[in-house]
Structure formats: structure tokens, C-alpha cells
Image (cartoon, rainbow, N blue to C red; front, side, top):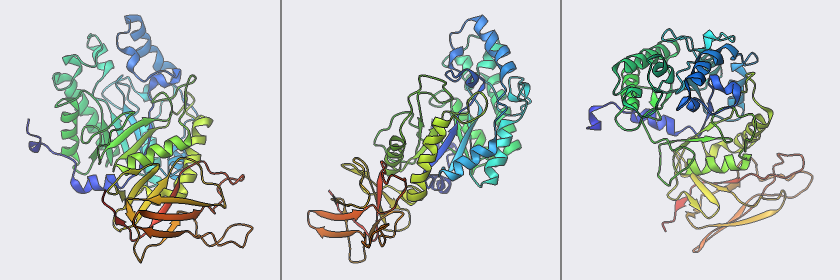
Length: 419
């Protein structure tokens, strides 16, 4: 099938999307109250299990402490560029006030429109709105008397006219109730199937909506060296939504280094934050990770927002990005932490300094080192064998002066050194 017969993301909107560094993925559906895998437990489940899943779980869904404004403020304060919320997951549960199915959040003890509250909160903080929508619908299959599947023809709207009509009605609701929607992530079967059909309808309704999954590559839990634009889907722990135990969390340093790798390739990171919990709250161990990430973003966001790939993505333990509209290069140094107040040395082989070049660690002036008379400005020498830089981490971000996360060097008026 000729892709040129179909709508695609507008190039200028895809460029806008590529300016964004990181999105917060609030992955949440009715079975999050159990801390279990989202939706997938219904595949191959017994009739008794399905009855309890579709009829009993909604009766106990009551995240009474949920506050959409908190999550919007958390995203804004910790440096996220947008928030993607689950409108409908594979199980068919809708997190908004839909007229298409009783299997929705309004028909629970909680009784409120989660998507609507999120949209209002995100707009108040001027954050772009992302929505996840799965055309696969276990509830629809269950009510139709079919075995629940992700691969049978009746599970795919491309081969089930009734399911396609049902999904289109839900997309119309979302776009009419909450539009304009900045970003949509459309899950479902691969190829010219449900994602393509739903994406075409979204673009018909609003050509300015950027579709990630369904409109561009969306690698999940692993990366290749393919360049963007793409949206990389990763979890902060073992699971997309809340997991109450046996959860191994990424460290803040791991999250930052993942972000740097994604941005060095021209992609955008969508990070599933592992919450809310059954009460609607953000678990403290998870929020702690995000606040620590927020410190790094507050200092270094210039290196990951409104940037494009450098001519090389990485050189040993250094990731590169380039300012979108200038010849400033950012070298993000990972690996062994730089000690405060000490001169560190690094040699770069893919960057050449010019007579106008200035170099300094992001976030600091290079003119003051606390409690000393030292001038900790960076120095550098351009050799044929590389750009040799000496720099002092002079800004205090923790009380104990330690800083385990990557340090970023801003190099202005930089030239590329081809390998």
C-alpha cells in the first residue's frame, strides 16, 4: 500500500515534537489497584476471572487522593516537556466520561473524569497534552462473546467493522471533549492495521496532532542506533503502571544517561513513572527519582531541549547534542563523578574549537568557587589530536558537595571533526 496516499505527521509539527526532550507517561488503568500488569492478564483467562475483572474490579476502583494538578506541577517542576495519559488501554477501560461503554472511570466509586481533570491541569501549566489510546479492546471482545486476543482478526479493527466504528466513536469523543490534543500514541496491531486506520482518522480531525506510535518509530524498552524523530518508551521500574512490590527502579543517573542517549540520536524519551498507586498518590520512592531528575534538568535542560544530533552521537563516555539554531555543542560526560572544586580533564576528538569558542560547565559562571578565592573557569587547548578541556565543577547541588550525575560542557562556535 502506497504510504503517500495517506496523511502523515506534518513536517513542521514533527520538528516541534523533536524539540521536546522528555514526556511523562502516566500509565494507569483499572487493574493498577492490584499492582499488576496492565490489561494483559485477561488474555487466556478463565471465564470466572474475566467476570471478576470486568464486573468486580470497577467496583473497588477509588483513587480518592488523586490530584491531577499535583502531577501537572510535578511534570513542570521536574523538567518534563509534555504528559501522556492513558485514555483507553487494551482492556477497554476508559479513563474518561464516555458514552460508548459502561466500562469507564465514571462508573466506579471514584466517579470522576480523570482525563478531563488531567487536560485542565496540563493546560493550566502550559504543558502539551498527550493521550494513549489502544484500539484493541478486551471489553468489546468479551461482550461480543469472543475469546480475548490481541492477534485474531476479530480483535483488529482493520478486520472488524463493528470494533472500528466503536473505536472511531471514542476517538471522536476524545477530540471533541478535550481537543486540541497535541500528541497521540496509538497502540494496536502492527502494519497497515488498526494504528493506521485510527491515525488517519485523527489526522482527518486535526492535522496538527502529532502521532507517535502509529506515525513514527516508538522503540520500547530498548534502543537501536537509528536516528529520530522517534519516541522511546521506557519504564522507571519493571512495569508500565504501579507495581506494589518486586519492583527494581532505575537510578536517577540511569534515567539521565538514557535521556542523553535518546537525545543524541534525535529521539524523545517517554518515561512511564510507575504511578499513581491505588489511592491515586505518587509513591515516594518514585517521586524522589523524579525530583532528583528535576535538579539535573533545572541545570542542564539546555543540552536536551531544542537540540538536534551532532555529527556523532557518542565518543567513549560522552554524549553529544547540538543547539537547533546555532553552532553550540553540548558534551554530556557520564561515568565517574566529577568531584567538586577539582580540575577535571577531558579530550574530545569530534569537536574542534575556533577563535570565538567559549567553554564552560552548564549552570555555572566559572567565576566563583564557594568559600575560596579561586577562579574555576574552564580552559582548553585545541590540538591536532583533539580538543583538550580542563574544567572545575564549582556549583553545589547537594549539601555534601557530591554529584553522581553527568556533567555537561557547553562549547560555542564549535566545528565538526570528521572521523
